[in-house]
Image 1 (cartoon, protein in one colour):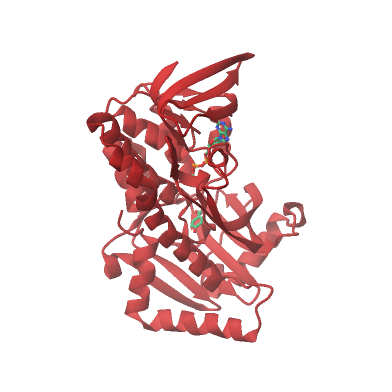
Image 2 (spheres, protein in one colour; image 1 turned 90 degrees about the vertical axis):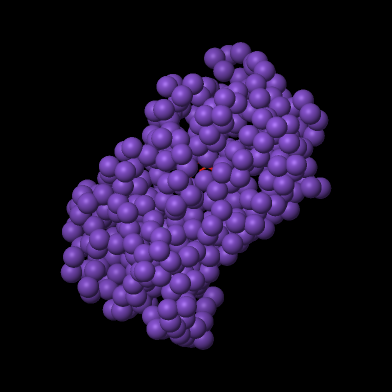
Amino acid sequence: MKTQACIIGAGPAGLLLGHLLRAEGIECVVLERKTGDYVLGRIRAGVLEKITVDLMNRLGLDGRMKEEGLPHDGFNLADGDRLIRIDMGDLVGEQVMVYGQTELTRDLMEACDERDLAVIYEAGDVALHDIESDAPYVTYSKDGSDHRIDADMIIGCDGFHGPSRKAIPDTVGKHFERVYPFGWLGILADVPPCNHELIYANHERGFALASMRSATRSRYYIDVPLTDKVENWSDDQVWDELAIRLGPEAAAHITRGPSIEKSIAPLRSYIFAPMRHGRLMLCGDSAHIVPPTGAKGLNLAASDVYYAADALIAFFRKQDNNAIVGYSDRALARVWKSERFSWSLTKLMHRFPEDGAFERAMQVAELDYIANSRAAQISIAENYVGLPV
Ligand code: APR
Ligand code: PHB
C-alpha cells in the first residue's frame, strides 16, 4: 500500500491528526496495535484546554462536547482548610472544558468511517524503516500476514511505549526525565461532585484532587507511595482519606458510593528531543509525558497535532519542506513550558519523602503568596487554561 501519511497509534493524538489531514484531502492510514474497545478502555483525565476544544470545533466533531461538556471558569487550590480559587475567567478571560478525554477519543473514533479515515486495528509488530530517506515505510502483521505501507511521512502517535521514538538513533535523541516518588490512586464513582469546580489539595497527609466527569459522575485522586497497591485500599478508606485531605468545606459535600474504577498510576515528567528526524515526526505521549497535576497530557498532544498538521498540510499542498523541518522546535517550545508548569504544580501540591520542614514551609509560603497575589494567580491561570499555540 502507498499513502502520503502513515500514523502509528489510534489514541487521541493519532485520530485527531488523521481527521485533520483527511479534512484537507491528504491520504493517510492509522495503524493501531490494539482493538478500538481497548483504546476506549484506557483511563484518561477530564480537562480540555482551548486548543483541544478548538481543534474539535474545527473538525465539526464537538457536538457532544458542547452538549455534555462542563465549561469551568475556575479551579481551587486547598491547603488545610483554606480554599484558594483561581478565577481563570476573571484573571485571563479563558476557561477549560471538563469533558472525559475518553469521550473525546470516542467522538474521534466514531467519525472515522464517515470521514474516510482508515484505521487498521490489531496491527501487530509495527516497525519503521528508512525514516532518514525520502521513501520511508512501515511494516506490520495482521491476520497472519505481513504487510507494508510506503509513505511520504510517518507520524508516531504511539504513546510512551510505542516503536516510533525508538526508531530515532541514540546519537540523535536526547531524553529528559524525572520519575516522582509517589503515584495517584484514582477512583471513579457515579455520585455528584463535592464541588462544582476542581479542587487540588496539599494536606499534611498528602495530595488529593476532586474532579468530575459530569454532574452525576465524580473522579477523585489521592497520592500514595509507589510501593502501595490498589487492593490495600477499600472504597471506604479512599473516601475517608479524601474527606481529610480535601478539607472540611469539601468533605461536608462529598457523596460516597461504590467505585466503578479504582487504580494507581505512576507519575513522570519526560521529554524526548527532537520530535522529528528525517521523515518521522512524533506527537503526544510518544515524545513527552507530564504528571497529571496540570491536566496537560492530552492537551499537549493536541498542540503537537496542531503544529504537525500545519506542517504536513504545507508539505503536501505547497511542497514546503521548511514547515516539516521547523516542526520539532515549534512543538517543543510549548512542550517545555507545559512540562515546567506540570512539574511546578506537582512540586507545590505534593509531599516529597526527602522534603523537610524547610521545603514544607516553602510550599505554605508559596500558597500564601498565591492566595494574596493577583499576579501569581494570573500566572497559574494562563498556564492552566493552556499557553497560546
Ligand atoms: N503499534 C501500533 N500502535 C501502537 C503501538 C504499536 N507498536 N504501541 C502503542 N500503540 C498505540 C496504543 O495502543 C495507543 O492506542 O498508540 C496509541 C497511543 O495512544 P495514547 O497512549 O493515548 O497516547 P496519545 O494519543 O499521545 O494521547 C496522549 O491523551 O488521555 C491522554 O493521558 C493521555 O497523555 C495521554 C494523551
Ligand atoms: C481528571 O478529571 O481525571 C483530572 C482532572 C485534572 C487533573 C488530572 C485529572 O489535573
